Image (cartoon, rainbow, N blue to C red; front, side, top):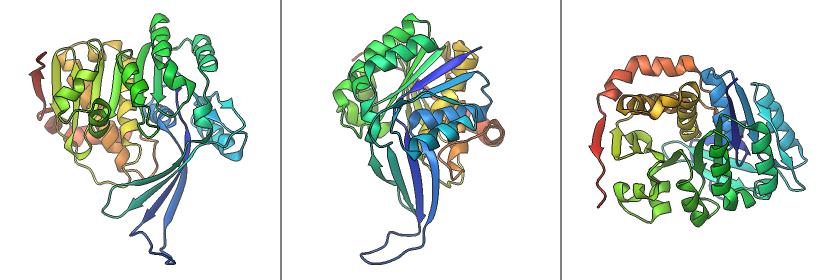
Length: 323
């Protein structure tokens, strides 16, 4: 049976939606929602929602507290196996503030995530021997430094490797060194420009290795794929937004779903374009939902049926020059 191992940082997300932020001493009525979060957690839940029936294993460092138990319970409820490294620190948490008409704000506590160890993670990789390894780095201590080693070992074991990251931990050097060791990398435009130090997307994309497929999401402007000597640019799906949190993770779940179903998902131009379109549709379906994860294939198919052809028609393909 096809299996995937997702390693990285996990959080308990508390979404707070307000019409506006209160001033000092002022009270504003808010709507709140608690859900499991963090890149590997969101991606795993979305994979289940898309209908992937193979083994899904998620691992991160958590504390011996109710929040760690909450993550295990929530993931177990959708058939995802949670194999945590329990350390004497508090489980990570994030408050996501969604104010009407403005971009999200985040208050985050990394907590136990930074205690994820290289030896423990490598041993888990060996024991799971997955068909696909997804690594979300940037907040995971020793694993951030060991990321190239882990990705290379996963490839030796025959796994497809997918890398995602967070820059909030400031580990740009470690992330940049890991990018060329992955088969597939996902980030957004701002992250890529910041990581590369470039101001132009095409120049920033040179950070990838020759064998790395780089997917770059650009919110309401669409998405890009850099693969081989090609640059694919595609316009967005148009949907009514409820909560954009987790859209990038849903996009990645769409990519992983295609790679798990068929490793030829990036083999030629038609497959590359189809993968980009499908991943965008998964991300678009997600933003219509309030929770950070949990998109379903039925929801994705509705988006594709309504707008798939029109989005595919926006595709622009160009050759990448070395200069």
